[in-house]
Image 1: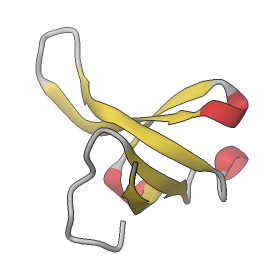
Image 2 (image 1 turned 45 degrees about the vertical axis):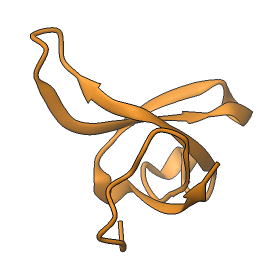
Image 3 (image 1 turned 90 degrees about the vertical axis):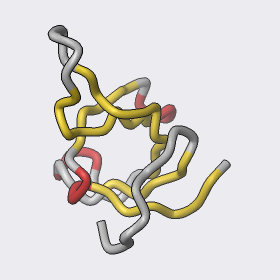
Length: 67
C-alpha cells in the first residue's frame, strides 16, 4: 500500500497481489481477527465480481477511496 492511511471498512481498493486477482477492485470488510480474538494484521477484502473474500496484507492492495 502506498498511502500512510490505514484501510477502513468500506474503502475501495485495487488488488496488487495475489496474481490470480491482481488488477481487480474490492471493498475492505475490516481487519481479520483470529479465533483467539487476536488481530492477524491482515485485512478482509471482498471481490464482488468473483464472489470472493480474501485475507490480504496491507502491501497486497492500494486504497482507491471510500464508499
